[in-house]
Image (cartoon, rainbow, N blue to C red; front, side, top):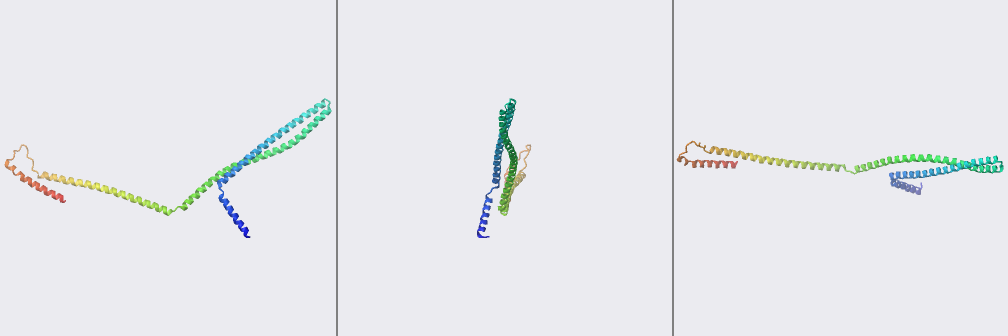
Length: 258
C-alpha cells in the first residue's frame, strides 16, 4: 500500500468519524419521516393526476363510441332511403371514429393499469410511513432512555463516594454533639431547679425547728380564771427573757455554722 493510499484511508476514516458524531439520531429520524411524507404527497398528486387523465380518456372513448353508433344509424338510414353514396360517407365517418376509439381504448387500458399500480404503491407507502412513525417514536424513547442512562452513569463515575460518605459522617457527628449539648443543658437546668427546691425544703425545716424551739422556751399561758401573779413575781420575768434570748442567739450561731 502506497503512502497516498494510507493518507486517503486515514482522511476517509476521520471524515466518517466526524459525520457519525455530527449525526443526531432523533433529527435523522425526523428527517426520514419528513422525506417519506413528502414522497407520499407527491405520489398522491401523481395518482390524482393519473386518475384524472384516465377519466378524461374514458370520456373521450365513450364519446367516440357514441359517434360510432350515431354514424352507424346514419348509414342504415341512408341505405333505407336508397342513398348509397350517403351511406358510404357515413360508414367512412364511422371508421374514423372507430380507429380513434381503438387508440383511446388502448390508452385507457394502459392508464387503468398505471392507476392501479400507483394506488398499490400509495397504499404501501402509507403503510410504510405509519410503520416509520411508530418506529420513530420507539427509537426516540430508546434514545432518550440511553441518554438518561449515559448521563446517570457519568454522574456516578464523577461522584466521589468516599468524600460523600465522609461528609455524611461529619454531619452525623455534628448532630450527635448538638444533641449531647442539648441534653447537658437540660440536665443542668433540672439539677439547678432541684437544688433550689432542696434549699427551700431545708430552709423550711430550720424555720419549723426554730418555731418549735421558740414554743418550748416560752412560758405557758395562764388561764383567765387564774388570779394575777403578785407583783414580786413579775420582777423575775426580765431575767428569764434574757436567758431565752441568750439561748436563741446560741442557736442562731450554730445554724450559721451549719
